[in-house]
Amino acid sequence: MSTAAGTDPGREALFRYVLRLGDTSLVLGQRLGELVGHSPALEEDLGLANLSLDLIGQARLLLSYAGEIEGQGRDEDELAFFRDAPAFLNLTLAEQPNGDFGRTIVRQFLLDAWQLEIFEGLLGSGDARLAGIAAKAIKETRYHFRFSSGWLVRLGDGTEESHRRVQDALHELWRFTTEFFAADDVDNELAAAGVAPDLSALQPRWLARVDEVLKEATLARPAPVAYQWHGKRGVHTEHLGHMLGEMQHLQRTYPGAQW
Amino acid sequence: MVTIVTPGRAAAESHDNARLRAQASAEFGADRGGAAPSGECCDWGGRDSGDAHAAGGVPTTDDRERAVWAVLESVPDPEIPVLTVVDLGIVRHVRWWTTADGKPQLHVGITPTYSGCPATEVIRGMIRAALEREGYAGAVVEEVLSPPWTSDWLTEAGRRKLESFGIAPPERSVSNARHLFRAPVVACPRCGSHASEKVSEFGSTPCKAHYRCTACLEPFDYFKCI
Image (cartoon, rainbow over all chains, first blue to last red; front, top):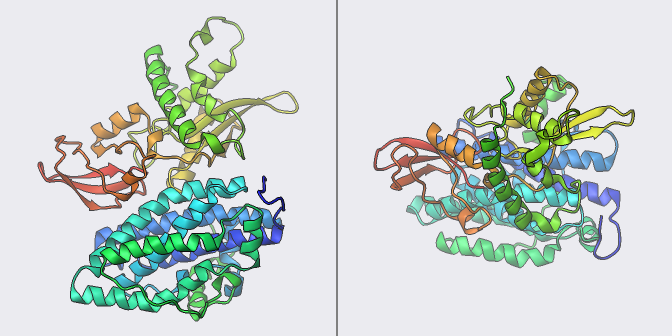
């Protein structure tokens, strides 16, 4: 791989980085999957299921790649179904429960905007495989962003109650966004190697994108919160374990079961 | 049965392929070098170099590839059976390789439409089955991710088939980012009116959105522009 700054990233760092991306897509996809048959209207049920499908498709591509990087013979299914919560490296926001429809939309919107920046940044990655996956995923993510930002505007600029609900959700979930751009050794090593985008450069662009929609939605952006969650280092809220309990149950009970 | 590609059909396809090649190279030309084997896109043109039949005797590479393309043109998309996998633009290459022990080995490259589209696995199986039925046992059906599929890979023939099937074909120019952030104006596939409205960004499959014509009042599927 061509590396701008000359240093090849360590295999371990690349493995963790790709897992973070894959796990975030997988966990968010699973959360949305929980809503199948429970959305407020048929159209939104289909919409959220389609988002879920795209995200799980991205997770398959990323987790397969992570397994190859690791070189221990673990495939996408092994990684998805046979790791415990502390081995998951998804962003903490992705694992937060669905709550009401407004909260689901706020979570989706914040993560869609984040994925847009990350995938855009990865288009020029020195790692051709990651660049290829990003080019595939970004087309879907743009569509997701249009869906979630459209709904955020409708709810925010809607009735008194819908406004209150999404504003509350925004206040509650905003704290998890600090983690999006908190770079650690893995991020720094891969950015230096020209594999991953520099997170500090992405933050202002993400914020501008978010602000534009919040303004149209007549929503106030919460103040920055210093405390960070550390899902991408394997430290999770209690919600992830419960979610995995359901997601992994069948494969743990009948390992290797196929459709 | 294998359908024979007539010269007229081949010429029409050739036009499509030129458009697709131009689109692909314009959009992705800069980063094609990486993982993808070089010259991959050129296989789109493999079918239409005109005088492949002229020599007689030993089949040329073109003849062998053309025969495989003809088989692929008989494989329907499982979700939208009016389209073949070739119409859908997901077959990226047909290539004959020679193995280490001198045997010919067929490679067919396909690309998924959507990352999570459940039809991809089914399509892979259907292609393999169709090839085996026509005597191409042991073909390697491989996934090609770059450049990613967009609705611009749909052929002209595919667009026409969609419309006559009652599914509005995608608006063009996905390379223009504005189209991705704004709902397009879609013509009703039944009455042709542009007085349509979006019911839902998502429809019965990942590749479709749900629209309604306000002139003839019929609901219809729109093949999403992505």
